[in-house]
Amino acid sequence: MSADEASPLLSVRDLQVQFDTAAGTVQALGGVSFDVHAGRTLALLGESGSGKSVTAQAIMALLPKPAGRISGGSILYAGRDLASAKTRAVRRLCGTEIAMIFQDPLSSLNPVFRVGAQLAEPFRRRRGMGRKQAWAQALELLNRVGIPDAEHRISDYPHQFSGGQRQRIMIAMAIALNPRVLIADEPTTALDVTVQKQIMDLLADLQAEHDMGMLLITHDLGVVADVADRAAIMYAGRIVEQGRIRDVYDHPAHPYTRGLLDSIPSIESSQERLTPIPGAPPNLLAMPSGCAFAPRCAFAQARCLEGIPALRTPRGWPDDHTAACFRTEEVLAHD
Image (cartoon, rainbow, N blue to C red; front, side, top):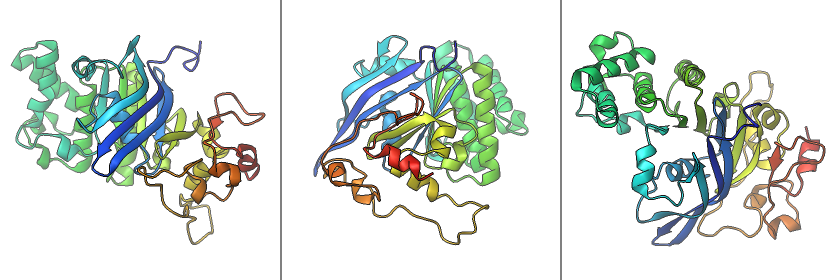
């Protein structure tokens, strides 16, 4: 049985999230569904503000209270619906079963505690280890993620490390208790290309070692091209396309996906200017009727302004490649 046929570790179905603001209620997620399998990576892609990080926060019970709340759908893990579970119950799973690498390691690490103390804490709190044993585990983690001279650096503070090293420390904290699911939220943001490659290789090695399922969140399509198995493209709080990574990249079935790919610079292209997506994402307080991408879409017709298209498989394509577009076949014909 293949990983895609096996039961998923994490199954998100029709997830809806709302935020109450002074200006009104924002529908941040409008029905998001995906699966994360053991040993496989799902890349969640899209522009800033599309709902990627909100999805991760909802899974980890980190939505800001009282403004943010899950208003519908389910998050199934090990037979439990985390969407309806109490926050305290979900938090008990965090670190041991589901872990997260946050966007900004400098703000996520405590500046007044040594790195070793922060790495040792989960072993003391969750595993009941003594101080000496937990410190030894912390040192092993630093060596595992490739921090040079770890024996001496373990007593340093976060600001004494480079950006790439801090990201490695964040990864070490996330994998400390061998979680089954790892959520990596923009793990290579603000890192140079060489360090990005090192971080992605490290994540791939750790995933293979522990057979983790990984949800990789990013706006950088180039970062995940060689590491993800599947891609889910988000726009305005919805998934508009989902499929195997190569199918999505080579044959985009949604105009938004095509726009994202066209805006990536290529060394093989003689084109001097990039092709941006016209317009701007919609205001979530005043969503347009019909397809949210229609005002920016070159394929839009009258019906696109009236109804919201559901995810469907284009005629003649594999069942695991879906797109939320009325004109999917025409989009594919432009390959």
